[in-house]
Length: 407
Image (cartoon, rainbow, N blue to C red; front, top):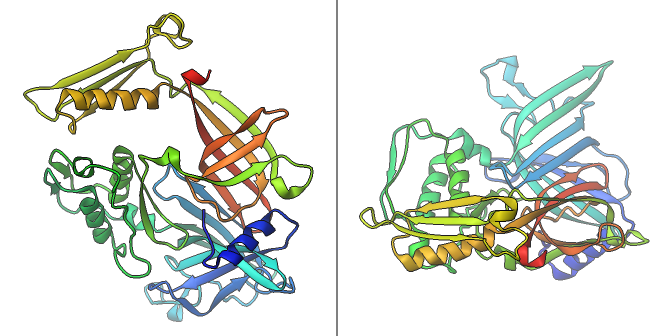
């Protein structure tokens, strides 16, 4: 979850979210160095809640399953044509002029009014993908469709075959991808890579040569590697590339709580709780191919007659893992034990409508409490949510793991 630099302001900001408050939206147009351009701040309201450069509508969607984690839609009133994209002398090949044009960097904040002050957090830094200008009866709107800076990675492809040798570290490969795609590695908006200090050296590098063919998208491949290596990779609300080790993700502290209450303090409006067994397996096989001449194998099945998920009751549900990082029997057994814990599960999902908390981040751990009807009081991993720019109603989608021993 995003936090304000000043602890007193941070506490006041999040306390105010649980009370009646007026929201504040700010859109800032940036140059290529992430500096605000002259006259580039657009407010939905000033301190007296009077309309100035009014933001008509907008929404930000955050989805941890995508490379482009944050996307945005924004509609601006355009009475003086200041937000109309145009080129100099109407030349289609001329330079862009004006405040808004394709690939312009845009940062959006959402906050609250408190005692005449505005406290806000960044909710996304984007590149403009599409700009639609609508004109009717001498009135004008500009609709912007935007995506976060993962767009740089998606648009970047290998122009020649690229090879990474065995022993290359994950972070070396990540840095190479970012540099080739034009993503900053240093400076105040430079990449912040997890040093994976909780892993052994063997768990930080590739164990076989890795090749990428010409024409392959760096964005697509980096997302695949993020899943394979169990590292969360994304651009944060300020537009900085972030990587975080997910090996200890279940130990993350609860960032926020939504709960049912007679007043708005709980911020929970309604919930839908669902269960499925897509992630439930009762037969796990691990194959270690680190040594081609001595492939190792470990296997476990659930045949316990007292088990609710035994093979004889629900069928043989097999999950197989093949890894070139494993070349010894004890490593295969260790991987089997870890995989068994991860795959011997039921999956619970939750969708809730809540009063907006703009400081949430994908993969945050949050607590949901509604003990009366939904019978829920537990922690969940935040997978998808939106940040509305005009209304106060936010939708959050979460996942949770229920193990067989809890059934």
